[in-house]
Image (tube, rainbow over all chains, first blue to last red):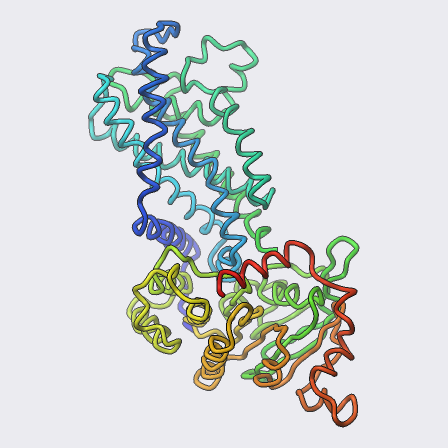
Length: 264
Length: 266
């Protein structure tokens, strides 16, 4: 045995990236997943977006409706994929993979966060497709490097947030059947109680309150601010980031507490 | 006393009102090959899960390589290797990649990693297949890769839960040959569970037969056979101490997991 002393924080960060690497290496062997993932946002933008844009029913201030929903669709596709991330975790539990990782000295939080990051990096393909389609549909995008960098970070963080939430559900329900049920029940409320495809101004008051408690709302606001040229933030980019980071941190801690339950 | 590597004292685990492991007390010496036998539901897997820190005991204590499973779980995890009953390598990576990730997780120094991985592959007779996807491996190869993965960091104790379930006799022999070599070369203590009596007879220094969460009999194969008087086989010993398996048995999840493992490896 090697008895080198490793600082806990350095060790934690290092192990987090080892877990991310583990997940991404799988992607390198089979990247069909990246292609199928790109389909959903394409359908929403091309069909839903086009139709509602023509109807003129949505009042989105000085931004055209299609511009308004492009960041919303990106956030939505991140959510839809991330929320079913827990299925993989249950699959790994039914094999012995979770058990073997948990019997290793890896910090639990590194196991959870590393998986979350990998989910984040996987969603980048959805970002690319939304940008390409937005460009074709004439959405006025902000191409400044800082804005693009912000979008990248927000997408990765948002996917980390929702995939960790999904992992927590997996740790609680433990079977695939129950997980699918819960996943379906959660996705739509998270999506509709947000500002992804309509502004919160047009919501009834009770829904407005819920949407302000929904992290997806802040993800969409941050993406809208950074993706679109000349768009201003409703909550302020600082608050958006604060909510996203705070929620992610809480979820990772909770996930690290619950993850060992999968081995029992 | 110094060469006791595994010391279990009154280890107990209850699930609701059911007592899976009941005040288990046992010690295993360094370098020993120790088999835990028993019918389905006797508490073997629960015992291994507690010793590998995956499941907290309801009461009792165990120390593994000098570390307490209750108060020093990280120390225990550094000192052990674990091969679960179910398949624990990832089919969507190559054999080499599966080992690389664990070399990193166990903090093998960067300059030693490649050499250790190459050595582990060679030791398990997988050198030619290191670059292949594990999804294409045979059952015996998967098990050997799992053992390579669990022993990269040279653990003091290797825990194996039903290491040969679902393997044909040839693959089973190959796995055991490598396990025996592992002990001979590195002095690794092997602690394993099995249903196969001939395996226990052929490879164990000592064995314990568990029944309803307790140790019903403990000793070398010869001692156990002699305990019933002359002319008895290990099979007689098993039936005598573990009783009829009909009254016990695993739950649905355990049975389906075991069959799924057998199917994946077979």
